[in-house]
Image 1 (spheres, rainbow over the protein chains, first blue to last red):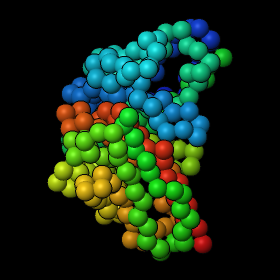
Image 2 (image 1 turned 90 degrees about the vertical axis):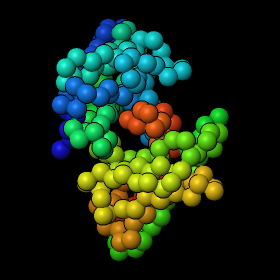
Image 3 (image 1 turned 45 degrees about the vertical axis):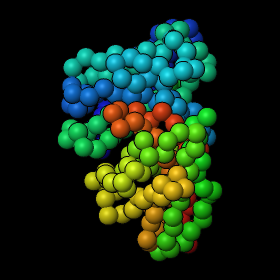
Image 4 (image 1 turned 135 degrees about the vertical axis):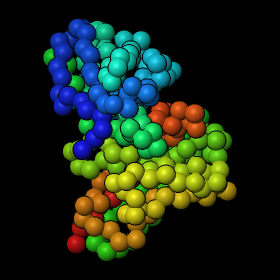
Length: 108
Length: 120
């Protein structure tokens, strides 16, 4: 079992806002990073650190953190945002890395 | 341009050994961690372990410690993931990914993946 917990599935209407969460004790000490994975593709970094976007990632993607929960928010979801989203961070020992179980985002 | 290029798909029998590779280019290979990530069919991402190519220091997930070996040859900017005796349960896509020493949980570049199929 993962030390980071994500909801298995979330849906959002086209153009609306959706938040995907990631919970874990280690998130009280470390930031989460977020990855988007589409079928047949390698994961793609979308958010890291406090709320940083790599070059080329649309600004509708944002991140936040509070207590033991990290969140990825998509403001104005597009059809192309339909994908699996994974968080990752360090484990509670801080010595290893761990991924959340992933959230399948459906854009209706 | 930063690239991580992985070796091609493999089909193996249970009990066989295997080494897959990940070649970095477009950056200083010895300035970043290389991690390996497993994705079993239809499942999520699992961090297996990482290597510091500058000194070959390794750090494994407890779930994978003793089951695989991560190594690197900095002279050719290549990291490896190795099995001595494959099992059917090793069937998966394997990705390598780069992360900064100061931000090890942020994988900013990924390889294209290597599909390993283990079947008798």
